[in-house]
Structure formats: structure tokens, C-alpha cells
Length: 440
Length: 105
Image 1 (cartoon, chains in turn red, purple):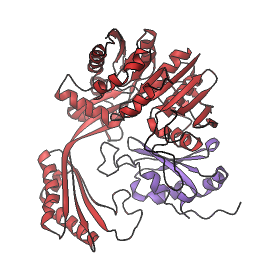
Image 2 (cartoon, one colour):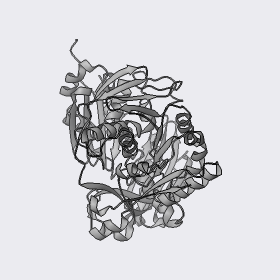
Image 3 (cartoon, chains in turn blue, yellow):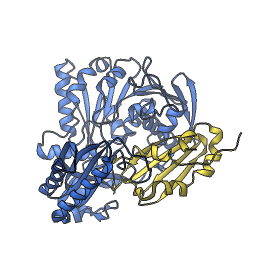
Image 4 (tube, one colour):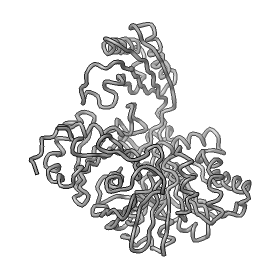
């Protein structure tokens, strides 16, 4: 038994041509698409609240034609394309498949990750906000549990060629196909740990092949404009991660190490819906050009609780910027900051959080790194308020800096909804899942 | 000497927690790196950017020091008003740390 599986997406707006290259490579039997980040889910729920027929991934109609040959030759696809609306995603897949002459394709739909009702009924702690769900119930716009590989395996066993759901956890998109194809039991924890390692290295797309890596002159990869999604070749004895031939980037000890511990806290206890994975003794060997062999992943029983991200409406966020250049630019920008703060005093109590900083000086690290006088700076105001008019008023005060101090130019302002997504935990029994396999 | 001269890094986010993994360019420098790049040194470099604590996990098999910084992202990627709410740039701030020179090998 042997499986080759490639990544097709690492976030909601990932490059379709990179997915097309994987689909047409002839190298993989499966593609996994991670379409969600922490904030994406809440934004999708807001789209669905405005229009109940939406809330799914926004690339489906553009993606299906790209996958036509891959699907026609029997390739299988797993993705969290559902976002806030798995049924709408399935319907959009079906419509596009029929239009391409691929009617009859079996689509597995996973439902049940949307736990908005359950989190308010149970009054769940929201530790990062220092409150509970009931206390902010009227502002909760979404709650989605990270769900695992078991419903994916269920769909694949029912011959689904496309499997989609909402907040399927990133590595689980790959764990499902791996365990299904290799016949690995979902409670064989060491093997699920190995499958999770493969999923972890694939779900962030080009992060494993030279993306987010270069820092010349120390770290340089060839042709960084043309990166490949990663793919894994896996059987009972071996896990290989590699990339497509003819692409840039690199798969080597350094690129693999940096991604191995990305967004992991205790490496011996990486919690997913499928397993408590242990990556503390993972060995990486170069097995060929842009090809690494990984071994030593382990696992123990999966957690009894599922992580839930709860979206809470915090009103509106204003961002406004203006530039100053030449001699004295920092002093003029600091003067501008004083003026804005004075003008905002009458409404300051209605602004929940306010930052005013200077690009080129202190936006990223505050005062942690001191530099010399820059040639130009850009003042940036960011404010959050429940009342949209207060947010707009804060942005307006940056626009009005056209009238002093001298030489301010290039004002850009925006006011957008502010939704925080914050973690919580629910017992698995509060997250009943169901699957349905339909035909396009 | 800056840490960047001898090590590389990557940072990621989960909620209001940032993790930054650091690796020496040369595996032979791992023990030395472990001795100089302590939790306290990293906490001092980040100052009030981190409102929680700095925890270091050691992964010798891959010459990795993984720093977990709690309450470090101004409320998390979706709440933060910072320019870089993910803390993607933290991997660069950690490389700005001044480290003592190594003894010649």
C-alpha cells in the first residue's frame, strides 16, 4: 500500500496556478485543500448571515475547471471548502462538475462543526477574552469546532471522490486520506501521529518548499517566484516529503525544520482532533534533491475535548495613514499624533482601543529596535469602537492632517467590521457530526 | 554579534500566543545557542510586546529552540490593531538579539 498526496491550498486566497500544477503533475492520487485561517471562518459566517446562500469558499467555481483532468482520471480531493456553509459548497461543486461533463461525481459532505447554539447553551469559558459565551451571547457571530479525520474516512469509504466540510482541522485533511488508503486505524496513535506529521508539513502549502524562508544572504532558494506546493509519498514504512520538478524553492533540512515546529507549542504534545502528536524525536534525512525522509513521529490518545473558535462582534475597526518625508519627518509625524489625540478627546471614551504609530519607526516592534532618522515615515492610526460613526470619526482625524503639520500626503482610510475569534473547548459529545455522500 | 549571523527562525500564531523556533546555521552550535539564548534573554528582547510569559522547549534532535510567547499578539490576530497581527515579523526581531561571540571551534 502506497499513497501520494499533495497540497492544493494553504489559505482562502491561495494561488490557483500552484494548485493547477499539482493537479496536472500526475504525481498525486489525492489533493488536500486547507482554505481556512482563524479569521476566515468568522468572515465566512458574516457573509452567510447577510446572505444565507453563501459562506462557502469563494474559489470553487474557478477551481473545479482546474481540477477537471485530475478528477476525470480518478483523483480525489479533500478540503474545508465548506467554511460556514458546507451544503452551499457541495452545491457549487456539483453545478460546476455537471457543467464540465463530470456529473455523477460523488461528493461527501461533513456537517456539524457549527456549534454556535451549543457554546451559548453551555456557557463556555473564553479565556483569552476573560469572559464566557453567555456574557457575550448577543455578540457571538460564529462558533466552529475543529473536527478531525474520522468523518473524512467515512466519506471515502462510501466512495466519495470529493470530501468537503467546514472547520476540518488543517492536518486532518491529510490524515483522513492517509489512514483510509493505507488502512491505518484511527486509534493506532503512532500511525495517526505520522499521518499528522505529513498533514502538518503539507497544510501550509509553500511554507514547506521555500516560502516564508528567505533572508539573504543567509537563506536563499532558487526561483522563489515559482514555488511548488509540497507532496508526500507515504507507506507503512516511510514518509517522504518533496515538491514538483521544475519549480523553485527547496525541500531540505532547513526548510523542513522551520515548518516542522511552526505553530506548535510543546513539541511532545501537539493537540489535534485526531491525536496527541509527539514531534519531539522526528528525524529528517535528505533522501534526494528536494526530497526529505521523515521518521520518529509518535502519538497518544486524542484529546477528549475539541477546540472551538468563537467569533465575537467587536464593532468596527478604523485604519488611517498619512506620510511625511524629508528632514524632520519624524518630528512632524509625532506632532500630527498629538493633534489627532487632542481632537479625539471628546470621543475617546467610546474608542475601545487606539494605536498611533509610525511605519519606518515603531509599528512592528514598538521601541524594541532603535534606528536612525528615516527618509520618510507613515503615521498609522488604528482604532476599534462599537459605534461605526466613532470609528469613522477617528479615521477622519487622520484625513484632516492634510491641513497640518506641513507636508502630510497620501491619506488612505478604511473602516471595516471587527470580529475577534477566540478559542474555547467543548466535549466531543457536544459536537455531533454527520456525513452524507451525494452525486453531482 | 547578532543572532541572525548564527541562526535562523520562523514564527507562527495561535490565538494570542506566538511561537518562534530558532535553529543554528551549524548544528555544532546548538549547545552554545542553548546556553546563550535563554527565556530571560528573549523576554528582555521582546519587552512589553509580550504581556504573558516566555517558555522555551528544547528539541535537540533537530537543534531547535522553540519559544512560546503568551499574550504576545495584542489579543490575537483578529483582535489586534497592530500592523502585523500574526507576529510574522517576530522571527526577525529575535534575530536582532545580540549574542556573545562563540569560542573558536
